[in-house]
Length: 195
Image 1 (cartoon, rainbow, N blue to C red):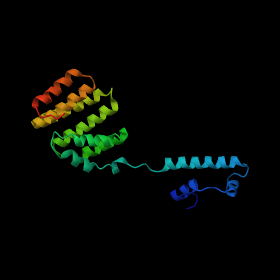
Image 2 (cartoon, rainbow, N blue to C red):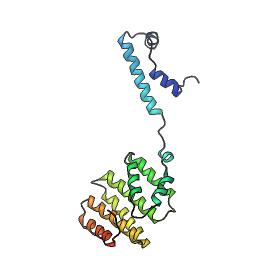
Image 3 (tube, rainbow, N blue to C red):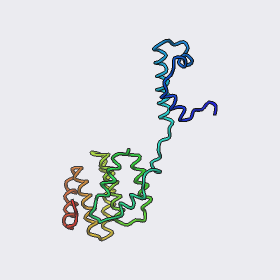
């Protein structure tokens, strides 16, 4: 195709040394070191354009949401390791990618049980707290309330203890001592929460 470069041609241009005769074709009026500098500048601009024009990977297509739905659904309600593992993955992503991943996991797992639902809320809460500390409590409280409501609706003491412990821990991280103590004690009173 006339007038277009393939990725291979562009990379070849960027990383192939240029002879003096080729430099004189590019810029016949430049002499000596100026020719070399001019060519280096052209290569830098071409490399920058290459970075801009290459398509960025679409996060929704790469993130293994089904795998995370499965991992967040399995195991005992007192096992928080799937949430910690997901948070480790999130720590290597930017906020937009994390939001897309959380939405994708939520969409894939909408019919999953209460353990999945609570762990997903826990992951979202942890992400928001991690990225917004010391601000963002107004975003966390509705999620924490939702987590407590879902846990209470199950009548499962372990899930209620889990949600209470998350609520108390988050309040403690924001120096909100009254709710931190209230919810942490509730978790401990149930006697099944693991710190």
